[in-house]
Image 1 (cartoon, rainbow, N blue to C red):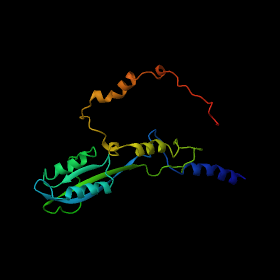
Image 2: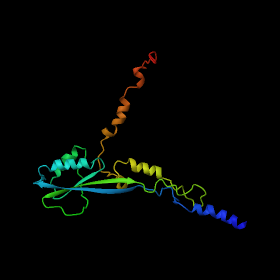
Image 3: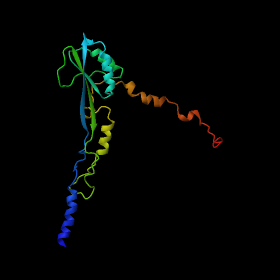
Length: 206
């Protein structure tokens, strides 16, 4: 009988030791940012792209679904084709980034390389229900603690790279833009000034 009691006591202790242990207030499940580089080499003519290469680059942008959050860089002689690439990006409200990442392979003489770096964020291992909520003898939160908040953050962030280094504080901020929504709210006439719209149910069912 004593042996059975010891076994029953040891069972919850063994279960409590299983699963993810999180003894702090910060979740162990944090967003992970991954980057993928897309590369295309284009022929140049002088300081710009060769005839037809701008159209080919535009089609390539569409094929990879270029969008906000992607970073576009140029690898090649300084200034070469930068204006043509910048013109295509301006149509999408984007600009050329400063530094090009290191890519495999050599750039053919007389050509320029355009690199699109795309980042994605995710929280691996979530949801995590590997640890029961009770009993707990190690002072750990639930194994799924933080999964909902961090997974939502990873899914909603427009630029996943902001999760790594944030934004530069040197960017100028226009107060007129930041207060535009407040001004629209303050200057809008109250909804009650237009009166109550008359509705009739006399034609219902006819």
